[in-house]
Picture (cartoon, rainbow, N blue to C red):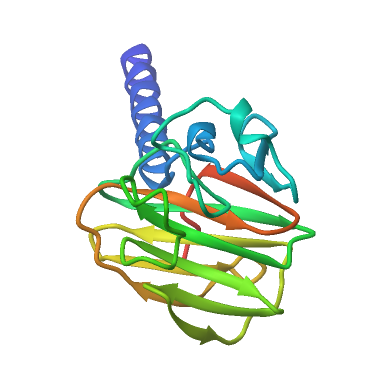
Length: 207
């Protein structure tokens, strides 16, 4: 009688383990890389297309593959994975950058525009040592956060929210109410330094 009991106990443990794995996978956000074919000619991707750095001169436009997906006027790059549902969390390490924008944008936003300028992108912008939200050129100041080395973004698609997260306190600093009408992708713009993305992360407890 001991063998069936032991087998049942083993099955129960296996089932519990599988449920734990499934729960962890459910909490894990999207995993993405930066899409080179969208990157403006002044931007260079590195570390397996998870980081982006700004170059004053950048790459010669004539040496880049011609495509309609590349940003032509502004130093913007989009991620390669779209979101249409769920809660997703990723982080961004900031290196030597004093002017950048991070957020999400419609996958088909105009490549002649910049994130935060039109009404199809929602971003948090850092410039002149201050944070702001930015949507359709309208800016609003954000208090309670300086220039950390790393920040988090929490995207809640069904709730139509995008939040800036202070990773040192694991706390939401500010939330943007959005108006998603279709697939959106993580979006980045910078005019100096580097940004390194960290995706495929679980949504931290408490957020």
